[in-house]
Length: 528
Image (tube, rainbow, N blue to C red):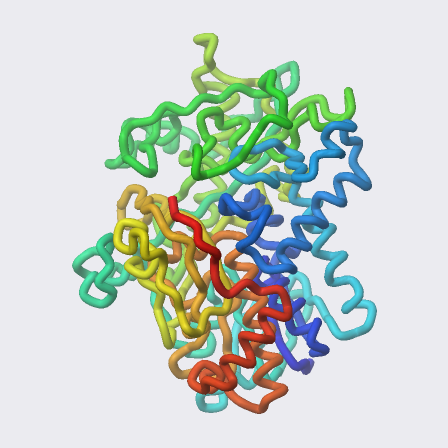
């Protein structure tokens, strides 16, 4: 098969990349390994992690269209109360992690609607379920990618975009990349170790959805439960399966609560990470359906997503190891053990133990085993880039009132604290206040390979700065820019590095981005 732009990986970055190229009239082939497009927002069941100004600015126009489409879908098809329907910033789940917590299937529907005109016109071909297994190179150019799924397919394209969750095309194409911690000698980062630790990567998590009804819905004791029930990491204040965890920002011991279906008013929830992380009651932290947003009887229970500290799997990495599938199996085993613990042994506010009325909602997440279809991957392989974003570029402690570094080649913006979960080398949380930051074009340019572009979490960040650049709006922004860059290079007949290195081309490309609703700089705001 042939096309103008091949996008491998149908997560948020891949979808945005495809849309960017399609809007400019290019033919696109988009591939995805799992049943749903949308990655962390859908198949991984992670409600959006967004900054405090998301309703006003700081995201691309197409990402805002995605958010608006999700709200419109609820207003059109869900039995909202009159109050909820009128809410301009409707938060269907009234979750505290984001002002837009929603069911994954709604995002799937909106993404499919955004892509539908291009499927109909024949400009877009979507291949599911397919994953890359090999690549054919011609010197420093990718000639074709071998995909396997229901059939074996070779796809060739002038531009190949890697939007996979783990940067799968980088080793297949021989593109130089890095994993895990870089050394302080290389990056100068205050939070980096003295020596590089390529196998030390952030935890992966298999999320799941639950509701709570009357009756006993306890599942059979899952395999591995006894191991996980007694598992006690060195940096944890006790067993991993507990309400007591380190506070990510202070590392002091914190006790979380868990009260299903609280008697709250969902329209009073104001999700703002500047004010509070919002995880005091884990039930409402990532709640995706608040029963009181809907007419009486429509929902018998709230639905919440379990993406909590205790499901983080950091026993072993899942990238560049002999059997990554074994790590993913263990991560799923851990999540099932957590669910069983919640049903049978979790301490309750009334002094009892266990919530036997909890029910796995695999119908909400699309996973055959009741969990999310796909694991949540926080950290990918990352290209050796023309420019690597380092902690000193955006750390609030380093930059202070100056704000994050302003890049002359800025191609987008983002904001999130430098948020690193426990890692496979035995490290606890790293959580550093950040300034609202920019995305430099140089971080999207491999040093050698000329027609491969990263379109997700595989850009030129470090292990540290990936903690800020890995979230939903930034991944979308990166992917959209990659798709628009591929079109720009095709139309101008120049390689991507020439766009960055030639002032006239860079200015023209940045004008193109602005015209497509990509914000290049922040207004005058402070970090947190």
